[in-house]
Length: 240
Image (cartoon, rainbow, N blue to C red; front, side):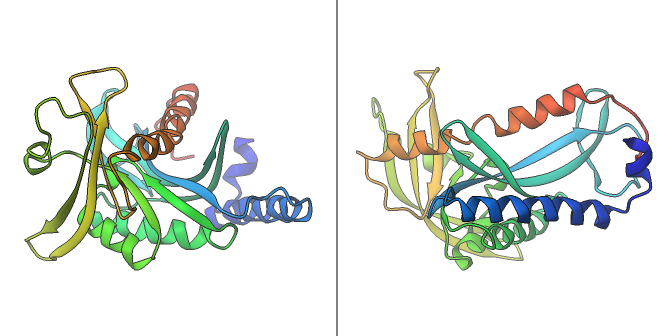
């Protein structure tokens, strides 16, 4: 397999993947197996790399497994009960918010060619105000796992199980950005003293916060599955 892949360009491999995906969706539509609307999840992945830092799509990241280099890419997957289907993949060539912002737009634009999206769920790696403003411009309903700030945690009164409140995300340094969102938090599934936080543009009420968190939970397992693939693959310094 490596012999044949070595003689293909990245564009040629992408074209083969696109051809298979197009054919698959033709079959799904012809058999009326495609839901009218789907939920999707966008995730960041890093596969550790031991070769040259100048290799395409290899970024410098936090140290792990004796290296600070990794192939970095983002995926968009259709998520449903017991279903995880990777619809689109895009490599990242930078670590900053602009790269993530562009990746989110590209993935959603590509996905909309095949499905109608109801909600998009994004992991904590996308919790940045510029990404949220991009989602607003795309006019899509989203839930993003948040890294709680002190301002968020101050909304959690003693003994409260859930939090739902208006919240303003902003970046004061150029390039500045502002996004008005709803922040909500629900108790952690295993740690009673902790909460899981999200931001969204959906109309969330205290009575529905747990249901939205559970819906977001359907995407859990995507990162793990890609991590397992990475663990299965042989480690090499080869760019092939």
